[in-house]
Every structure is written in C-alpha cells, then in structure tokens.
Length: 114
Ligand code: SF4
Image (cartoon, rainbow, N blue to C red):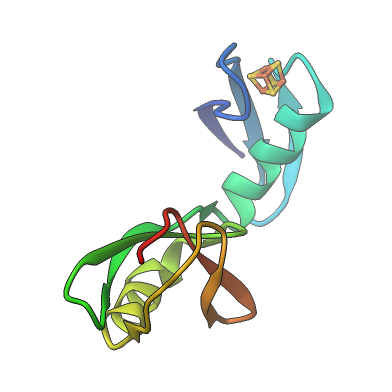
C-alpha cells in the first residue's frame, strides 16, 4: 500500500487529495470536493498529463506561442517539443488555428501573426 498526496489543480480551490494505491491500482481517493478531483487524482497517479505550452518558428521570423488543445502524457512532453522545434509555421496565422498534430493532439496558435 502506498499513500500519495496531491493538490488538485482543476479549479482554484486546490483541494488536498490523498490517493491510496497498491502499487498498480488506485484503491481510494479522499479529500476531493467534487468528481473532477477524483478523476484528476486517478489520472495523475496512473497516467499524468499536461497541457503543453511552447513557441514555434514562423516563416517571418517571429516566434508563435502555441499550446496543445488537450493534455499530453507527461512522459511525452520532450518528444512533443522536439517535434515542434522542427516546424516552421507559414504566416499569416490566426489565434486558435491548428498548426500541427502530436500523437493525435492538435497544437494550436495562441495569437494572430500577420
Ligand atoms: S476536487 Fe473539485 S473542488 Fe476541489 S480543487 Fe478539484 S475541481 Fe476544485
């Protein structure tokens, strides 16, 4: 048995959550004030993910801030950044435009560049 203490980041309340595992499986989740915290804690213990935020080159020379539309497995973030480092985005580009894909996750522009 193993106890893992987390702070839920799904909303500003930041509930302190305790997860009990047997090493492979989640046995219990306590301290969450809502179901989102339960899901966050289980995902965090079994397969942690993060929204990727970074910048990519554009053909005009300006760096374009981008983010993944969905969280990416934490263990794959460096690989995703390496993938994006090889990209040069053709301008103009619009806020929210998909500029690439990584493992089925859309990477979108976070601002307009003309
Ligand atoms: S458990 Fe629910 S209420 Fe608590 S921080 Fe997470 S999302 Fe917010």
